[in-house]
Image (cartoon, rainbow, N blue to C red; front, side, top):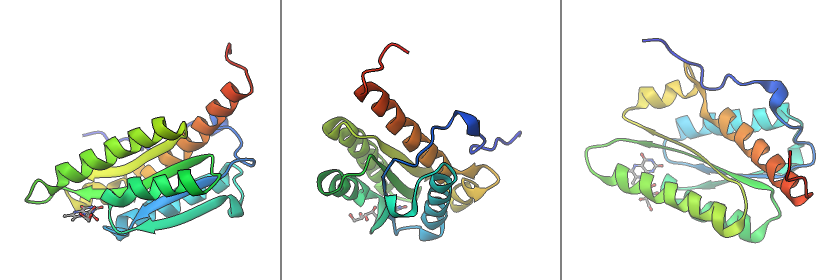
Length: 167
Ligand code: DLZ
């Protein structure tokens, strides 16, 4: 089966992030994976001009807590976007489904409630290998993609806020 590097993107189409601020929430559960996602996200933000002091990273125990971690950023900081990073690996019980549904719905709700880009960077895989493949392995790094998505959404929001709606 052909593989695809999920992190391949057109660098020139990514706006400059030097005036943007980001909050990143990282799940400690499956940290081998989520730490790599966080590293990818931070590196990618830097690559596109985001300053060190404008990236705030906080940790939560598991992916289920990512929503509330994101809400804290929305309520108590002035970040332009929040990136949620987690990894849920299918187990023998239905816990997987509940966590995935919870954080997906939670992230969606935060976007709408706060009119703030809240990026869903949560791997939901059948096994550890699939997660490793997507956290700096043969399929790229989902953290990079989350960072790019965050920058692009902040730029889009700024465009609307500046009244340029007819481009
Ligand atoms: C309990 C649990 C399980 C079984 N699996 C995962 C997982 O694969 N990935 C993850 O991020 N978190 C997992 N958790 C922890 C939950 O997200 C949460 O922290 C606990 O249910 C406490 O609310």
